[in-house]
Length: 288
Image 1 (cartoon, rainbow, N blue to C red):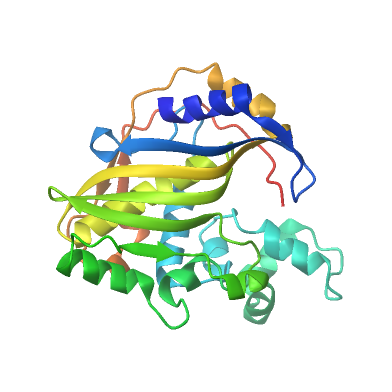
Image 2 (image 1 turned 30 degrees about the vertical axis):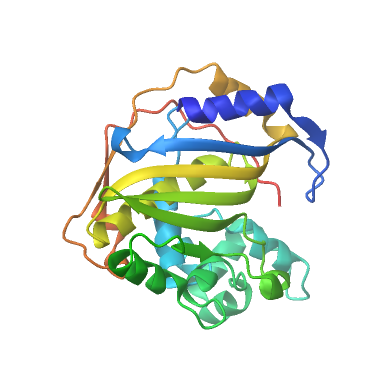
């Protein structure tokens, strides 16, 4: 996607070297915005293959309000494993298990999964229980009953609980907008890992917008992605430059089962991606 490659070029050209929490180091640029017209195709990166299965399962996991990685692990999704594993390694219970052994214990030992698989009150918890408020349920009711509202908002940033989260929310605040029978969404992301995270976030919130539009009887509009600290980790420079050498291909089409009428009824099988022709995947290490 041109929008993503333009972001990469902007950060490389005008960003500044900056230390970070992980000790990896970044090139960072503050304040950037991208727009994606969802009628032009599903914005899934084509300059590298993106693991759509992980995006869909993570989104369904958020929607349920779950905060334990067991659901993700059971469905072959690895994207949240590093944080609970690092916590486990620092505990007295750690006996030298590698990541594969840790994941196998999450899969097969319910007591272990309950103790070591929970991430604290991260995204799903805030979406569905923000101090007793089900923000997702309220959002859908408002879109249906008061679509001109300027208060169509979900926030994952809950200051009193930040200390209890494995990772404070990066994609922290979303606002929805209804006009001309279309639903649009703007996401404010306080921190964006351009190589690993941003492609997931673009696809995830675009899909979320499409799902909410369907259950509210609307068409998808525009996804607006606003990023605070947009950064490229220094150990991802080669991967970013590889993508900049590639010419973006046509966007795929996301087909959603039209029979689903409730946001809580979607299953993985309700999504079908058509025409996805990406370049090969590019590996990169997540900074924890």
